[in-house]
Length: 279
Image 1 (cartoon, rainbow, N blue to C red):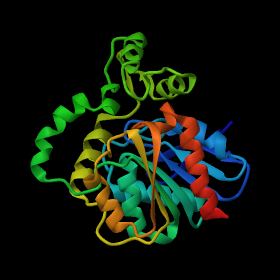
Image 2 (image 1 turned 180 degrees about the vertical axis):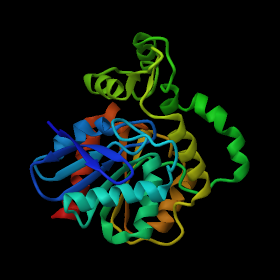
Image 3 (image 1 turned 180 degrees about the horizontal axis):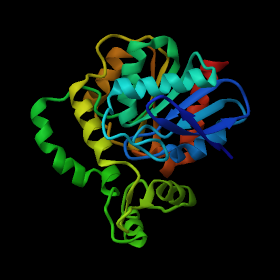
Image 4 (image 1 turned 120 degrees about the vertical axis):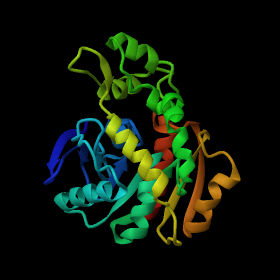
């Protein structure tokens, strides 16, 4: 089982899960509105061969939730400070959804920090036109990973909503644990996500403003494409094929959250890629 640890920066506290049975460093980055516990199955699967750390990103989970500053630059600075604290000069980076774009930006800005890159159904890789900001209120209501933000009148109401979401529909013990780790009772007695509105709004602003790819990258990379994920068309994959010069593409069962919906095949896929890059 991983240990829950805390790292204190000058501006925020980062909470993270750590599996420390070996030395090769692996950093697991969750997607928007999730938390580090989504990586529980993968962490357990890889633990014997790697030193694994899965942080709650700022604004998420047990980490600090500042009122502002959710830029890619700040998130990358958090991760590099955490790596320095751990004594890591570089790491294999597994990223999901929104942090897929974060990892791509990080790889072009400071490629020496990433030994390899695994992109799990990434989204928002391009800079987005400014007029799309008008659609954000609609997206906040319809995107599955944001529907669980609340507020809800009770825990039971929150759970009822969660059971309808794609990542939790089977309501396995792992899915239930992830949901419970990401929700809390608020000061007014309502229930809602630990992911904050300030984080949501500023991350979407940043996603719109900053492009993911601007130059070719030679880093060994794996694109994990779930059968029912968001990247199903060739035009969606083309930016990754164009800019990642050492790219492998692998399809796995499941939806946008294959590590929650089909963890066995997902874990094997990640392990096989890392074994080639490590050994």
